[in-house]
Length: 189
Image (cartoon, rainbow, N blue to C red; front, side):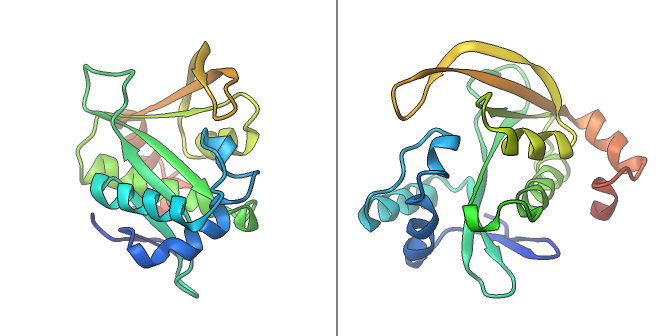
């Protein structure tokens, strides 16, 4: 997994000794359920998840440059809804302590750039639950286009059936945003 850097962040592969940082934010009941997973109840769960991240090799640890603390994750996953184009689904989570600081947007923008320029993808997708306004804001700030809502398409960690709000970003749209240097893409060039 290639190490990526932004102004304030380093996106890097997960390490087994990241368990304390992951557990610190993953135990928060305001974090995991917004992404579809249950809060971690102990460090053994966090350790198991890190081992999975290491094996899958498609999820970066989001770390702060100032102190190297892991504050979240961002990944490029196979999109089960799209089988015909070269695509990935972007997903991210951030410690509640760091919400409203533009850090999720900063990390996602860097991964978008990597996906189109280095992986050669044709399309990125992003999804969120209808109630997750913070995630919607990140997705929209990053240039994704709303496609629609899949009604009753997923079951969350509480067993509730929820809608999934769907977005995508095409390579041509990304290139146009970069060419026109429309913020927030102008710093990527």
